[in-house]
Structures are given as structure tokens and as C-alpha cells.
Length: 376
Image (cartoon, rainbow, N blue to C red; front, side, top):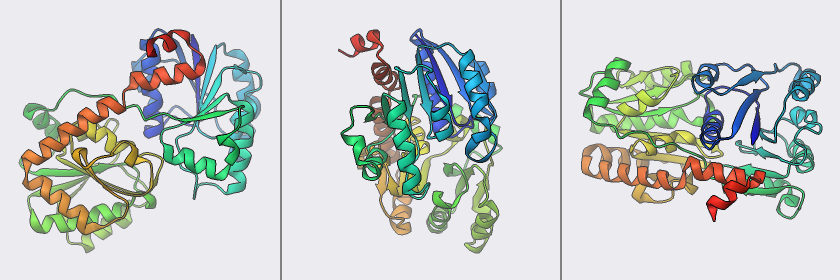
């Protein structure tokens, strides 16, 4: 089967990483895949080229991309495919699909709803989505429930059936002492420190202020720990000022954007993740796949569906700095406990985040009979 994936943009965020894993798995199963991006391919381009996945950028112009409507229609007319997977909630692209793979296309939504668009906008998007797609899938029950609260018909309509399908996470090789030393060398980090880290956009809802507040409390107990921030964004200057105000500027290392987070994960001993809103939160799941214990707080999101037990990580629904700090200190002071939690986390993600199982579920929705047989 030839499957075309249409995506809003091609950065290296969680949505793109999940999509890349899906395309790799589809290709490994013998399907022909192609990516079509509404925006420029950006940093995902060399990754796609390396993996042999053909990709095209349409270009995105005008408010909500309306000036790209005819361009996308023309590109789609030249494409041949048996199925379409659209990633993202772009209304223009939904309308531009026309009859392309009319009977065999699904919509994959990765973003939370509240605080992103107005209820009127979401209702318009879902009105079109239920008309255009046979199925709508989400990485968590949390955002499916959000969607149903906004558009109750999603729960009962026969035109577009909605499903939560867990985020796919690949399991890397285990990290030994030599691998960690090499990773420290690549990042220019002294190997004798213990490292606590997080990665992502430096934007308000990601609550890096909480991360730094936790760092300040941990440093008082464990002076030889360093806090790594892999990422960048509009809040960086403000956060650098906060680190100075907290007196921890010498304990925080700003790594900036990383083309790949593999080296970063091979260095850190504990991950601290904080967010006000997230459909899921891919970074803590990737850390778990490396056997890194995660200490997290999320006010609204689906992370608890994957990080579901204290046996494989610590998650609270408030940004309680004292609780978070106490857990980080406990893990740093008790290496045996940290190893136990990390091992349990890795095994758990291997089970619930299987890319193969994720792909089989999507193929089932697309009507691939061979996939249906493998699941029986």
C-alpha cells in the first residue's frame, strides 16, 4: 500500500518525531511512504533523506495558509496513493484534499485544545474533519475527552470514529559508562558531575521557571549537580535572569537546540519535566526509554496515561517545587533506587509505546488486511 502523510510542518518536535517513527515502521512493513509538508522541510529534511523517505514542501502563505490552497490542490493532483494520513488540524489543508484518497484517510491530532483556539474555531475544524476523514486519532485519552467536550457528536457520529492511540517511542541501546563518558565529551561536559535535565521550547507553558526553582532547592542539598537545558525560545533571556536571581547561574548549562537528543539523554541522570498544557509530553517518554528516572509535574495533559505508576516515575498535577525537589534529591542520593525506577520505566515504555503496535493500529483503521491478521 502507498501511504501519503500530509503534515503541517517538519520541525523536530514531538509531533514530527512520532510521525517519523510511523513512517519508518510503515516502510519496514513493506509499505511505500511519502511525506508532504505544508511548510518548509527544515531540520527534518536531512533525517528524511538519511532514512530514504521522499518528501515535498508545498509552501505556506497567507493567514491560515489560504494563499496555498490552490498550490496544495495542484500538488495532490500529481500524487498517487492508496491512503492518506493527515497530521495536524489545518483547516485549509482539510478543505484542499478534494477527492484525494476520499474513502481511506485519517486525521491525527497531537495538540491540546483549550487555550489554543476558540471553541467556535474548534467546532468549525471538527465539522470539516468529521466530513473529510473516516477516523480521527489522538495520542492520549485526555485530548480525545477535550475534543468530545467541545464537539459531543464525536462520541456518537458514524462518519468519523475517534480513537486514542498511544505515542510511539523507540527503545535505544542501554547506556553504559563508556557511552556516557563519550556523550559528555561530545557536549563538552565534565563527567564527574551528576546531571539533571530537560529539553524543549523555552515558552511560558513549559514552565521552565519551575525547573529552575527545583534546581535551586536541589543545589542546596547536592552542590555537585548541574542542570542541563536542551532547547531555545523566546523565554531564554528571562530564564537566564531568573537563574541569576536564584543564585544558580553556575549550576545551569544552556545547551541550545540539539539536532538530536540522543547525546543529551546519554548524559543525564534524572529528568525534570514541567508543563501547564501538553497533549502528552514526548520528552519524558523518551527519557524513560533510555532508563532515566523522570520527575514531572503537569497541570493539564495526558502524560499520566503513559507515566502511570510511581514504580516507573514520579508525576504530580501541581507544580509543587518542594515535592519535585525532594524526589530529585532522593534519586540522586540513592543510585540503586534511580536504577530500579529507570529500568521499570524502560520496560513500561517498551510495552505501551511500541512503534510496531502503534503502526498496526493505524493500518487497521486504514483497512490493511495483513495488519488485521497480525493483530488476531
